[in-house]
Image (cartoon, rainbow, N blue to C red):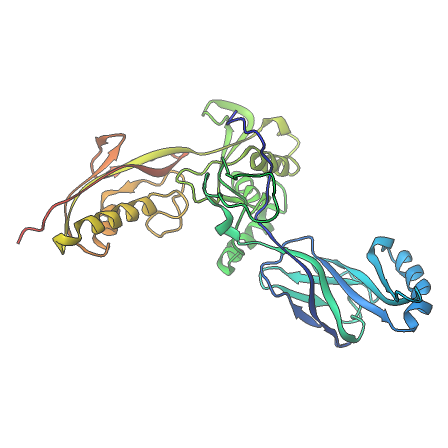
Length: 393
């Protein structure tokens, strides 16, 4: 049990946009429109005004009958009426999102969303119906967007109440936020594509389990599979343990219970029959703290304090499990830390003249030229002892 929090509720970091005008139906094949905010989260509601004016009241019953036969329901149809006469003047129809339009027919009200770009794509009249021609008749009744990784704030950072919470005197997040992720980059797609072709949504090898754990949720930043072992390292034939690290700004990110459950359920649905769901274990990382003791000479003695802060910040960044490492892409499991890498980082800090003394620490003890990291552990920042001495001339 991590804690008991009174008056607590789950929240999501999203911005909701209602009734945003997207454009006009032109009758052209493959028409594209764009949302004002990106990325577009799943669950948007796209409506097209298919009838208006005097014909809306007359033709609505026929449109409704055909729409229901095509699989829509009454909630997908919305009307506006004249206040004086009660006659229908507009009919809006909710269209349906699809991952692609390859299997859509000419009468299917389907569209595709490129969520990272905020691009809305309709069909060509053969694969997907053409939007009704009209002025300003395509709009997003509802959609949500998010700030991605920016929303993964550490514990205690949310302190301001926005909106009408009349009885709330203060607000606080006792746990770090998780789940935000940036749009997938092309280089990541090039790596993931061959993985999908290899595992085909089935977990048969160690690499398959790791690739599927990353696919289970965008909140998962790193995954490491330990076959035939429990999370504490005990041999256990028929078991599979996945160690996952979530995207987070915390110094030592740990996955929440909900994220671990989500990944476990995703893997259980794709595991072979020989691996029971109860024997798939999802655990957080076992970090190995690596410390640094350094004596640094600043170029300007009057800026020693500022340079010391920069060196400490550079070490905290370098030793962060997700944003650190020699390439700034995070530390792989089992990757050793070398004194030469640390020296290069410190010497590149603005205001540093040279490094007079430098040691790597495991706990508080010096360990020589490298810290050996076991294959099931990952680096995290340990004690940082940064001293400033005037340069010798």
